[in-house]
Length: 212
Image (cartoon, rainbow, N blue to C red; front, side):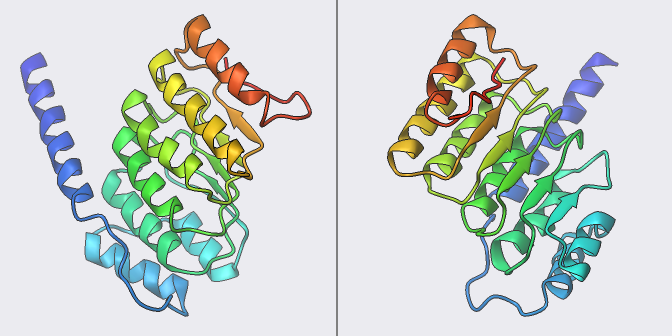
């Protein structure tokens, strides 16, 4: 039974990797109807639209709190493609406890390099590990408009903290907008905590640093 479960997990991971390979955002002018574009991307990936994201686009809301507790990568790709391609009002993207996993985090990072509206990214409790920190580091260093990132309750260790801390320092030198970076309840141990606290000194002027 254990062997069967491992084979199933490996097959799912291979499928996710195939989905990420062609990940790119179509060139051309931004669509004038983000909701219609989102529906078209959902149809392309064979997934049902997320209710919360659909409502946000329809009402021009400035925040999205995901309505699903399980987001497969194929569910997230239409969201990523829409945020990357369309002019939306979404400033706060909350995908807490959605079972995203590290590969979905990589897809999110790719879209955020293109997006100009999201200021707050909340992805707590999503089993995000060190494998996704390189992608997040690229976003942090790329000068996006992100002001807050919440990674509470994931599986990042001191190795991932080292990558992120380096990115935060580099971003600060470039005038990054990042103000708050939360990493409580990860697996940082003292080494990781020290790394993040050192990096946080430049990004939390009011002493609001949480990196345990």
